[in-house]
Length: 114
Length: 116
Image 1 (cartoon, each protein chain N blue to C red):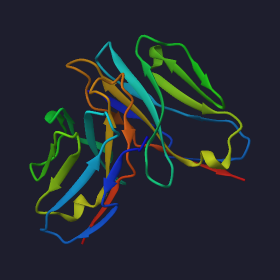
Image 2 (image 1 turned 30 degrees about the vertical axis):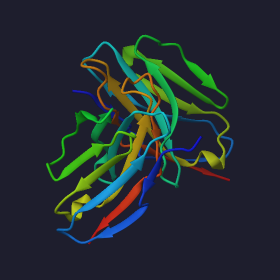
Image 3 (image 1 turned 90 degrees about the horizontal axis):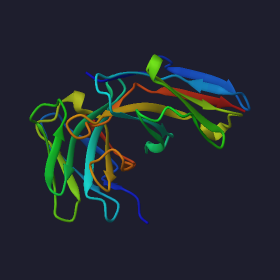
Image 4 (image 1 turned 30 degrees about the horizontal axis):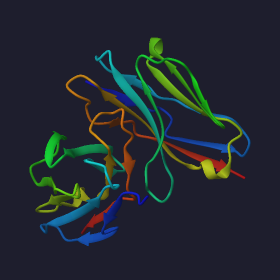
């Protein structure tokens, strides 16, 4: 069974640009969550989607947005990039949004903003 | 508000030593879940264990064991006879059930280095 895949794995962008990251969950999983990991703030929750609906949203500015498609694949977008957005962005999928379901994480997308 | 504290930033041990990673949590909810994840250098978070707040039994899985104590709000993780492959960053996380399972709140992580 294929794991969670994230594309691209590495990305370099310039301040002010926008970026879109993609996450393909494990087949059959309907819940996708996104996390940002930085050395200073650690792992922070961005958003969670279940069946194309946003279930939870973390404390991030409106520049961060996401969506989920009918095939459960998810994308997150960051507009007007800032240097502080440099981070490892991790996606996790699970069968459902209930925490009884194990969350499987992808390898992440490392975004560098210059 | 929920909070997870991993006071140990970095730990270094010699192979075959036992090591305990500490995790202290804060929550006002009576029903919650606690987790441990391992993040090897590849970056992918690997699920290790989930424990709900009503199950205080300790758990052992091979060289790994977990000690959950509600009285001290702690969920500590012990690796017995550590190996070089155990070198990674370990995260403790909490999710409250109130309101329908809140997102995971992670501690800052403990970087474990096992030296051969």
